[in-house]
Length: 110
Image (tube, rainbow, N blue to C red; front, top):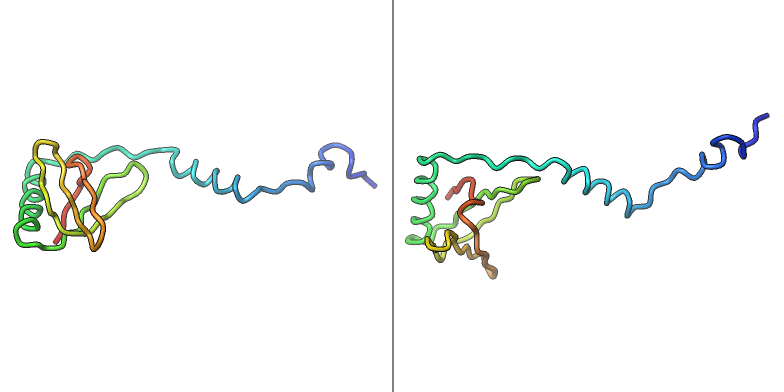
């Protein structure tokens, strides 16, 4: 009969992963390969600009899809400021607001 203390038997029963290590490994696997930034053509930029202007003037709620290297992000709210000098918009939700850079915008829907 083989002894558990010979060969790899000593460490065979101690194979376990701590929850912190599993979470760190999962985060590593998610962030291992970032996706490239898509290229948006001029016509799409015009449609995005028109939709943002309509939201600013008519107070429509818009949904903006933002670029993230690892997953899709969507934010919803009302456009309150369009700053063309700094190339960003201010989006206000119920009780919160955020500045969004033009280069991070992928699409806008009403």
